[in-house]
Image (cartoon, rainbow, N blue to C red; front, side):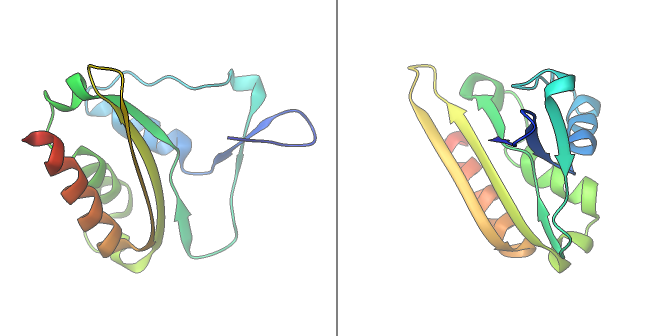
Length: 124
């Protein structure tokens, strides 16, 4: 997260809603910074920035392979995500400690398809 001049860290405006959806789907959610250190910011645009997410590969093995795209569709709706330019970044840490980073920016449907392809690579 970017540290602002006031010493707080900028989080995308979608952060709280995405965290709630993750919790509703059975995930424990933590933040890198305490509540008082965070500020949610919005870019006045049609783009949607999602918070950076981190998962352990052992967690991904026990959940649907498309959990991130599912969360996106729950947040924006089945059609709504297609009308947005999405900015998504997450990291999967394997049991051996290696990290596999995903980052995509672009039309919602293309980003969701890229997420699903990336996650299928962990499903075996």
